[in-house]
Length: 206
Length: 326
Image (tube, rainbow over all chains, first blue to last red):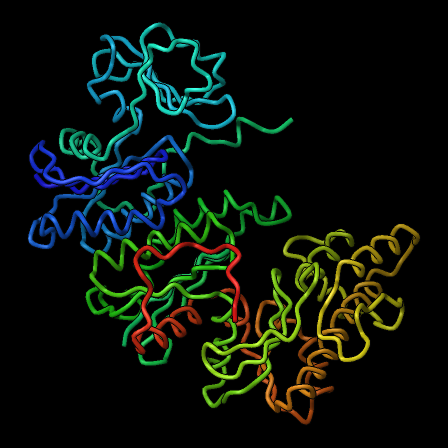
């Protein structure tokens, strides 16, 4: 199976080609606010290095959120354009699960924390590599992560410095997309939208 | 050359196909969700574009009887507009262009509005004066040839369309307010209330409409039983008088004989009538309504013009919410 994966949910931006569980090419860089400009160049590089036009892709995998609104917008917009051009399905991959699958989790039961804004974080609890709670957004105080967690972007909120920083990667996006292909694949993904976890219910300025 | 145009600069999701200078299909979907907020909410607008755009492009191609493999270029609005909505359209357009392996051109929305007039009147010739009046802009352009534009004057504060919308809000009308205010004004006497007209001396081609809106606010506060038809008619006439007078000055200053009116406010019938009366000696072009408001036909048309002359954008071109022209 061949999957082109795109990850733009944080200030990192990545494109990877995953073939039968192995990443054969990837470009990943931390480029805050430059996703709309750089993502097409990353894609072009991967395309050139892998002779992508000669490879029959099975789908375009996209890290679907939660995460940076603009980042997700750029990634999914680009993925939709690409998938539409090449008549490919899209495989939306949950961003927190990408982080959870990084291999950096400190124990079997752990929390994944992704910074949103002010003191708001996205979080989800995992057991093994399976999510045990839905993705949620909440203030840092009400999350109260226990001793086992990985995070991205939460440096200013952290009370436990043992938590490791793990940005979601395009490589893992592709690997998970292959693994869960049958469950997650969307053939007509025209109206697919990022999993923003609605902001209109939280974070209103007082 | 067959070019697909995509427009997502504000609350219109639009796609069009242009082939050798002729629009084959143009589709526009105006987001209605913003009505309940009394104005466009950028984050909501971006999300609506995300839901609509892909299907709209697919439908547009189908209606045009063109397969995506036949496309030779993509044109997309690069700016000015809302950052989030622009980025939605541009990202999709980039993915599509790269997936198809065809060139892409980021198009200036204002320039596209000017070129919408060539769709309205293919006999239009350079040079001409363009009065661009929309919710975001009030500008007078001296259009000498493609890529050669001189800004003669623009609004220092509110755009004319904004003055219509804000005036409508003060009068308790719905959103979008411009057409509502125009409807109310139809049965009114425009000579009832004297509203201020700013910067009307010495051929000054700059505009200012914020004082007008404040004046309406004070007037309404001071009146208990104002005839809303008369007030709306007077308010509208104050805006139109300024626009038409300055358009005439611009024509006189540049010795141009032709003028075109672009942007959403060009749909206003009283404006059209006033321009025709006051500029009877000039050639005046008003594009049809679907070409006045935001649309992708003008984007596809201008994009094809550039792309067929070898002017393509780098895949890394940025979104420019404050993009300027000239």
